[in-house]
Image 1 (cartoon, rainbow, N blue to C red):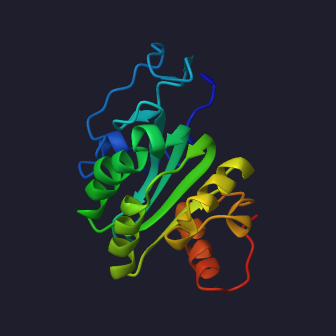
Image 2 (image 1 turned 180 degrees about the vertical axis):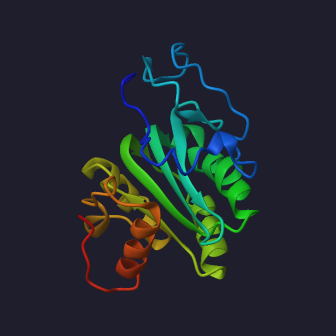
Length: 193
């Protein structure tokens, strides 16, 4: 797992550690010292810890004018044991929402497991973004992760599943991804390749 890096092609346009409004502003990364782990496997030092013991993130892009953020996740999302959604909501979302972010693209292809519990934080998050005309999308979740999310009934608050699980987002610019997801959410037929 130590060689799975967060997506880096947008770093020329955005770096959370240089963004004064980011919860990771001022963070310094040691490219050679591996200290963070998932399942006792070291992960790449570019991933950011936000309080969870099993889930890490990277804010890949934030556009405050357009009100969106794209985050990539890695690890185990465990609400049952660790209440990870609380950390996501309080340490990431609440911080970004203070600066007008109301559309969230959460890339889940490196989320290895999901263990659901209560949905209070998801409901709170959903209500806050909907008031601002926003939404939450989980992209490219593994099938067993998606199944557990469905069992936890997260589909009441988060867009995920078939149309969002085969999105080839890497070759596109962040705004293009968000615009295409918006069309998909609004019910227009489209495909992101």
